[in-house]
Each structure stands twice: as structure tokens, then as C-alpha cells.
Length: 458
Image (cartoon, rainbow, N blue to C red; front, side, top):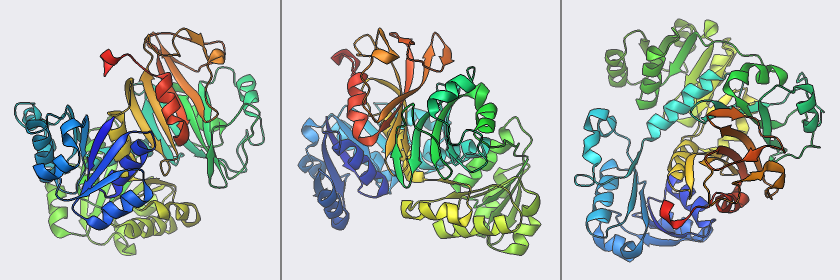
């Protein structure tokens, strides 16, 4: 597939990295020649330096025969105009735009994106994606990573194995015998910095980070078996009242649980805006690193603290201070992936990577086949792909044990006739079933082949 990616920043570079590694014809466009040079030096892509919204620049990028354009520059307006030019001048069929401004995302203005108005096929909102990820982290406080699949019926949990874990040093094949009714599957393990798909004979050791697929009804039991306790989040402190913090607070207010939320925002105008938009949340204007202000927010009694300012170091230090003041569970928003290894030494329980959440959202609309969801794990080390099995797929009509999965691919969950089950070797996969597959990055192209469809579905 020939794809043009506009914007060579963190998100654009990561998307280009994914797609070029899967033998797509990728061209990256950015007004910053240095970013273009970085992309062409490190990736198998072509680069064009220039403004993405200019027709002549898109023409040089090969827009006349491109099948998809992804507008992911830092400017909403440039992204919107780029999609308009791609549609009106070059007739590019698939157009994806990243938009940040809440005004552009308001549901009452959604008619704006019709083909005869502003022709954008898919709108991606980083703030909304990050807010959703933050709420998911709060819903599973004993895990360092989490994502829902199969319309909320299955959940991927990132669990750190410690000495107290009851199943430590136990071969994974024995978990099925010990907990025969547990609908959970270990699909990935990171050990000594390396992520791999475990085999049945592999064991879990203290210090491992494992990724577990669980049926939503078995999450509490799964966490208990892996040595974790689940607690309700009744008191939450938010540090940062920008778009992400405001969205999280609004969802907490609208949720079924009566979560008592307090927000700390340093910028007075942002604090006033948040106070006006929220009904029950108490908004404090000040520095989230101020111990006295944290005490006023009740940090020692809080069940969780979420730091979502636009500065990574502020988020990390706010989490460290909150831990020191007695908060049990802290989450930091981290844009720079090189800071992630510092999370554990600093005692930060979980983190959110905006780049990964945005990349996952964009990939969901790129993958071949009836792909329903994609989640990028770590620094693009692996993906979890949820897809419907079609009649043309090599999976259709075969038992799990009969399928030649690559070493880096494991099937996590299967939905058959509306019921989510843990797949066994004897489980038959039929047309119409929905599968959730864990795949290391190098095996994603093979997964796409397993999910292949006829040309009618593209």
C-alpha cells in the first residue's frame, strides 16, 4: 500500500516505523528538514521537506497514486486542510487526521467531516485517547498497563511478578490444570528488557512483566492468582487541568461510581476553566509539586493520584512526592519513552504513553482485514490485534492446534457466537469468530496474512 504520512514528529515517525517495516511504500512529509533526515536515515521511507497542506508538496510525495494519507502534524488546521487537498485535488481514498482542539471534536459538529464538507474519514484525538487510557489504568490499579477488547468483555493486563506471586516458578501449562475455570491466558513476558511470547513450558520469575488476557468477569480472580489485590478508587487526585485532566475528571463525574476528585492546576486560567466545566470536582490553583498543596488535596488519604501535565519530569516528581506523602497508587503521563525504565526505581506504579495510545488508534484503521482494535505494546515491541475471522482467512475452519502460528504470536481470547472464551488447542475457529492475537513486531505481517481477506473487503 502506498501511504503518505504528514508530520515526522513522535507519532508520525512511529507510524512510519510500523508501516515501513511491513513493506508498505511510505513517504513522510514535514516542514522540518532535520526531522525528515532522521526519518530517512533510520527508516525505509522516502522523505519530502515542505508544508503538508501545499498541493505541490503532496504531488512530489506521490499523492496522485497514494491509497492513504495520515495527517499527524502539530497543527489541527494543517491536518484538516491536508485532508481536503488530498481529497479534492488527488482523490486519495482514505484520509486520517489527528485533531487536538476540543471544539473540532464536539459531537454536535461531527457533520463537518462529511465527504462534501471536510472529507476526513477518521478523526483521532490524542487527548481523548490518553484520557481513556488513564481511566483504564484507574480501573485496574494493580496493573502497570491495561486495554480492553471485544467490546469490554476481555481485558489485557500488564502485571509485574513479585516474590509473593502464588504462581511464581510454575510452568504456564500447569496454570490450566490448577485453575481450570479461569478464563485467562499469559500472552507476553518481558524479562531483562526483552519481550517474548512464552511457551507452555516457560515459568514466571520475580521481576518479570507479563501481559495477561482475562475475561472481564475474571479480572479480580486473575489479579489475585498473580498476587495482586484490587481496590476501589474512591478518592482521586489529578495533577494537571488541561484537556486530558479535564476529560478524565468529567468522565469520573459522569461514571457510575461516586469518585471524589480533586484537581491541582498551576495555570490560573486553566484552573478557572476546569472549575467552570466541572460540578463536583474541587479545583486547586497551584503547583502539583507543592507538599502543602498536595496535603490540602488530601493526598495521604487518596486511593490514586494521576499526573497529566504536559511536562514529563513534573509528572514523575509529582508521583514520587505523592508516594512519599502516603498515596498508594500513582500514574504518570510520560511522552519520552526513554524515561520509562525509571518508573520502577522511582516507585511509580503505572504510566501512560500518549504516543503509543495515538499510534494504536491510527493502526486500528490501517490494518488489513476486519480489524476491530489494535494496541501497541512498549516501544512498538509488539501489538495486540483484535479481528473478525472471514471465510478467506487461513484460520477459518481450523482448530487452534492445527494453525501454524509464528513463534512470536499467541491467541489470547476468542469470541464465538457472542461468548468470550479462553482458546484451547481443541477449539475450532470459524468464520465470524473474533480473535485477539498477541504478536511481536516482526510477526505482525504474518498475522495480517492469517487475517487476509478478498479484495472486496478493502
